[in-house]
Length: 122
Image (tube, rainbow, N blue to C red; front, side):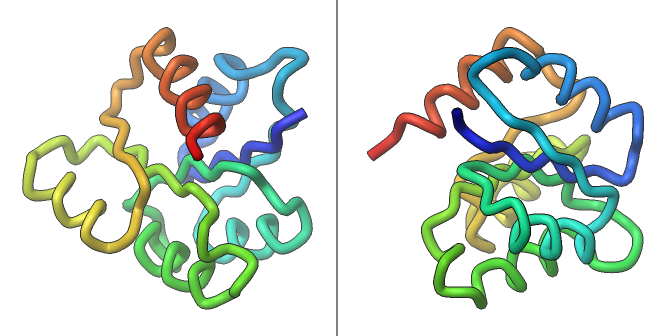
């Protein structure tokens, strides 16, 4: 069973992602901000992180940087999930080290396909 950490300051967004991915394939945990994300990753050891970029306190970029500072998370796939859908924001996220980019509002069918692809990549 693959472990997915869902990080978003919006409880509605977290619930939507968890509901969309719930089932026998995945174990899901959530975090409401970047600091919680780093702590949850250390305890949960996820196979994939879906992370909002804009959050109060430690934002997605800061949380990504904190995760990447741990050797065990250097190759952890972290996908930016954001309402900022401009190409410049996508380029910034990928340039910062996110492994993928999903725009909000999320197409749930696309989400499931994308998550499966991210978890099965070499």
